[in-house]
Length: 247
Image 1 (cartoon, rainbow, N blue to C red):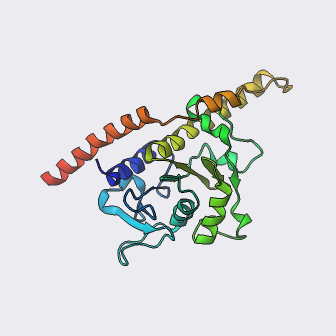
Image 2: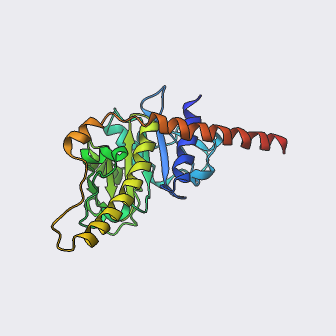
Image 3: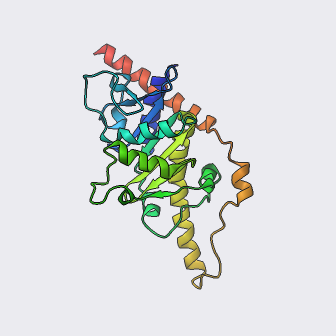
């Protein structure tokens, strides 16, 4: 199977789970030229096909001079790939459950084992650190570089009032680190509400994964989840192709 087909599957999987909407995006570093990456043209992720994929250099310039419009926020991807040679896949998502943790004093913490990596640290980037009065979009390399440096060596970073960016050594990890924190955020909010009702005085707190547990789970590759998501989408894509050929 091709890397580009997996990029289509990753994009559609994130859309199916509701962690990216019409404006989120997934990218993957080229497997033949590490100084390039692939991402779709400016289209809703749920609709992406391989024909929509474009190749970029790390300055986020298209390799092909002409073609369809690219995502405005492609600079998120290019600047992170520059700074993190270990990263081979990136997801910028708008998880509705995660956004409140980007703009309140409530810290996103690992309550759920499949989101244990949160315990390694998820900093919050405020676009005002780089530019005041923006439209909240990472529209240029300067903003992308600021976000990349805030991410640093962490697995993810929240973007104040916007969403988050998640990185991984491959698409499976990047997608898993996108979907499961969304679940974790929902569980954490539920647990915080339940704890507040059961202990109004605040004498007790939610029990989160401890440092040893986080380290024990740091290896997670999400291989079984990726195999499930990928298998489902391969069947759907084959059905789409057959339907198109029939027409």
